[in-house]
Image (cartoon, rainbow, N blue to C red; front, side, top):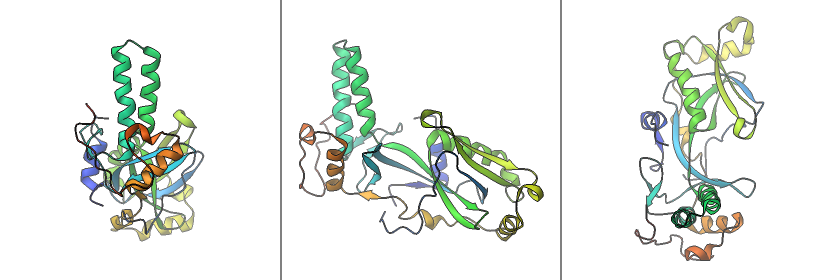
Length: 254
């Protein structure tokens, strides 16, 4: 998991203003809009940061087995993946359209570049009080910042407070919230209170993050680009090539 950041390192990225093996021990908990969990928060650093690629309804989320090197703003700057190349291709067209004063094309190419760019995401761990078992949820940076702000606010009371983790809304209006449950006698069941008490002095099992994310090699990423509708010949790639594609570092300008 060298390409991922966990604990304090992930927190540094989460709080910044700049925008594995697949045999996992755990999976992301289902967290669709309308979902809520009563949870216990075991610590302030039970999370990992990762970059993933996906295209809605065409390609499921995946991380790169051989990830690119990214700058402080999260943009790939070397060791490009096939998906980075696709994003860079449209970014290059966007710059040319800007130089030519083609406003409509600029917006079109900007959207296409964003489609293939790696998205910064965070996986946060909690304990589901209904089952007493760990759960891990997948959040955008903005969502994770909101949730973590509440965790930090109540940091000194984590051993005494349960929380409700909920998602509401849809599309760009989706909201993820973490709210303290003040009256645990009335708002938790006997079983939930029992599970809460069992966790005193416990820490979240960070090994659950190992293998959580699906990693695709370059060959599979190229196949995914085709599935997403991208013409891979535009960036000099083809199906059935080597597992890793060698890309000249000066192929794209930044």
